[in-house]
Length: 322
Image 1 (cartoon, rainbow, N blue to C red):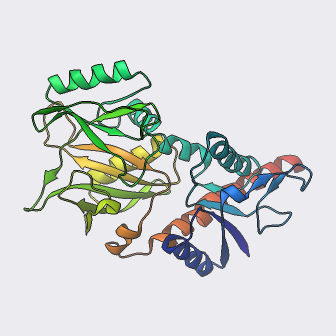
Image 2: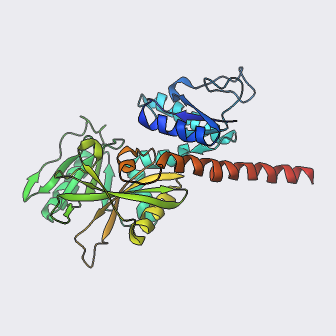
Image 3: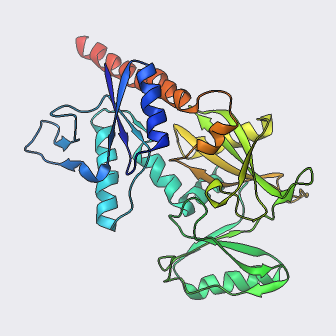
């Protein structure tokens, strides 16, 4: 029986969904907090201790959540993910992909480098430079979204610059922003069919966009955690293409890609990628999706990622025989 470590700092609906999907495939999922994993080079041959797995390692690891902590604690938790991959355990998504997506500035940089439409973005530790950027953008009529670099679920977002014709200054960066300004040009929400503004969330699994929804909200923040309402949305070729390219740019097994429609002009692409989530929640998306999302993730983990590792092992064994 396959034994999968579901790496999470909290259990609930998502972990239950994953455990049920694993059982349906004849596997077992054990929830493990990365904070409880540790390195002990005297304990086992491989030197890694994963609670509940004794002297062995899990057959695969599925990352559902990483608790915050000090720089040292988070470094060690990501180090465990790196170690699992180096020891031959498929990690879904692995530490490299999570690092790229959790750091919003790196996400923006990689999307830009790949030629994927995304709003102009700045990240700086200099308050003076950040102030100049805000003043320049405000003078040009633009608002900016100030985001915590490691934030999630729409928490802590602020509008600065030219907001509805009034200049809004940059706040002190030491409070809530870790002394760093991550600024992204604001894309005003578009209304559709008489509804408030919306954005799209597209789920990409194994390199393929599989489902989409519109998140509708009277507020400019469209996260479900902030009160947005989910509606089924057709997965158009345009949405699928840009979401798949975004996930590929960050080398992700699965991703929740957030996209905004724009008013459209000769200089602005009609769809902009706002964020790419490497530990994406899907409870809201499941409400408007006909198939079981957890089962799709588990099938991709077992049939693609684990099969690829088995294929690599077989290839190495073949070379040794020769």
